[in-house]
Structure formats: structure tokens, C-alpha cells
Length: 160
Image (tube, rainbow, N blue to C red):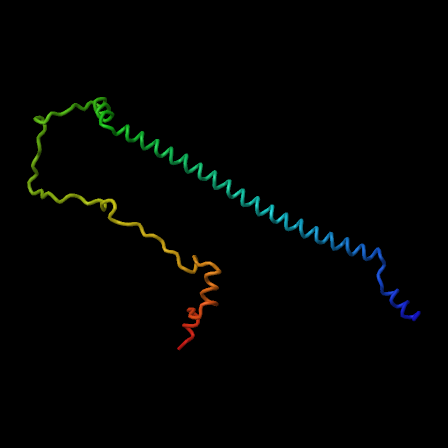
């Protein structure tokens, strides 16, 4: 009996070792929680940075659109009838009356048809991209189709 007691005493751990093991396990759990929190914060920061960059790009797009519309309105003003008349008078052109116009007939000239530069608007429809069902099907739909339905495509393919 004395010998068995000595062996169990020799192999039993001291109380401070048990406390040290519990402290080690607690610290390990704390480190794992801190690492998960750090990864979460990193991913969240990257997502918010990407979101902010997208907002900045949308703001730049709107500013560019406003500039384009402003330039288009300036072009429309510059090619308006009143502005064109004013610039033509500044360059020395004079208005022409219908009795002052004469046409020159060119022998051998054959008038061709009207030039067709582009198709009329709305004649061509833009193609709508179609997405394959594999990319729009959820996991639950796929499982119900493959596992739960007795007549799934895999079973039909195997049958001769």
C-alpha cells in the first residue's frame, strides 16, 4: 500500500502545475479570440475602405457627367442659329436672298440616293446577357434537386 501511494504521489501533479495549465488554456483561448477579432477588424476595414473608394468614384462620375452636360449645352449655344448668324456677320458673310442664288448644272452628274449613315434609332436591340442557372442556383436548390428529388438529372444520366 505504501508503495502504491508513493507511485501515485510521484505521478500526480502539484497544485501549482494544475493552476498553470488552466492559466495557459485561458491565455490560449484569449489569444485565439484576439486573433479572430483582429482578422474581423482587418476585413471590416478593407470593406469600408473599398466602399468609400466606390463612393468617391461615383462622385467623380457625377462630376464628369455634369462637365459633359455643361459642354454639350455650350456647344448647343455656339451652334444655335442666332450665334451662327452673328459669327457669320463678323466674318464678313451677308444674308442671301432667294433671287441671288443660282445653281450650276454639271453635265454627266447622276444624283445618287440619300446617304444611309446609320440605322434608325431603336432598330437594334441590345443583347441582354443571360446567366447560366449554375450561377443563380442556391445551395439548397441544388441539394433538393440532386439529393431529395428521385428524378434528379444525375440519376437520369446514369440510366441506359
